[in-house]
Image (cartoon, rainbow, N blue to C red):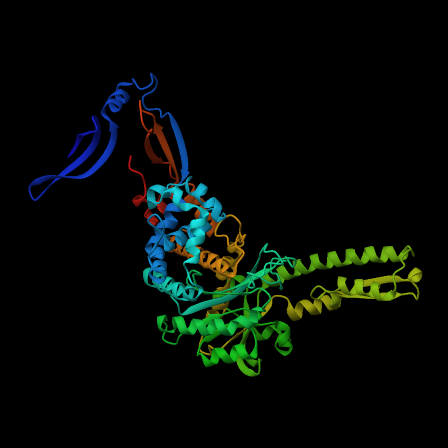
Length: 566
């Protein structure tokens, strides 16, 4: 039964809406909502507040709600703060806030609206997190985040990561029998003279920023949702292939007993990890694998006629064909599967045509310059230019060039497109891929499925380089320790974002991470402010109108636990 309850506090009467039920025959209040001071409520209902519309607020504020609440709910489900605090100690960094809570908030910010630690307090104040977490904005000074990062010894990061991922496996029932390994690097703006961050070093930049110091990151993720289970930060100058063995050793140590498949782990990786020592280590650790071989490594297999391949039933709509055979790969006879995809074939034709157009334009320009007879360059530099133009993959196989003349003034360049050579090239290589595995018992489609699952982790790396959501950069830290802890929070953020996508997918909502977070961000909270005769304005929170999809997400992520009562 509902009733109005009066409370006299400091000489003023306040009203509450109470709901009571009988418990063991006695009335008991089970719910209570604050309405406001008695005189203001009466004036509001009588239409006398300010002489205007009694229902109009004096001011409004809009806050993002859905994304931050959903992410906080997921972080709470895996007890991220508690697990971190259990490893580093539960001592408070500021007020009642522990190191685990600071790092959890840092991960939440990385997912929803990545910014520097100095800007987190300002961002936090635009969200309902103060109400949800109970942490005041004053406790979120960036120095406190740095203090929290300093509380985590690097020697404890692996143990924390292991505990967190085991919790994810337990709570969400992740299948850990099939895993994906991949590596990337991130450009930093760390000064060249900074000696406190040796992990940042120049190397082969995957973002093409060869002028910047790089930090390498390797991940092992589940095929089930692309959830990172293991991360490894390494010096940006190190080739990826050198990190493979230490990563799989750590993988075997951490998760061998967590696998629910009877035959153990199966690891999928790209050909960049191929080496004889790496394959020997896979065998020593009894890890199964699905990888690939550059097609040019097995020319005899590529030369097999199309009639030797058969349609893969599961991919018949793509026209995918395959030849299942054996070949010598990295010094041992292994099962290999040659596949041909018409879609890949067409895409490679289009891409190669664009490359040829660029190269012929460069050759045309050089030929015209030489024809004018004004060049002073010797033959060597001119031939070097031609070699650079022909350097892109396969171009030299189909373009024929001839440089004539004995002096710079008489140099002339002629070139031709060899159509027969291009047709031979396309028949030999286009649309083809060669998979290698030790799973002799798997059907062809299962091997292909496993290899294609790399897209989940590759999408995660692309997401990590998106500056707007789940971003790993820019990295606003300049010491090894803080860089490594920052990347730990980023990997946690990526794990939670992919868990959210997986939950949505299992509910029948096929959304990318950015699309999912965009829909959740659209669930806003509007705060209506009513100023009384004295004191702070009375606030009333309400959610914006939800679309049918947002209503599903509101239920899926249990946002009702954080939704303000009307």
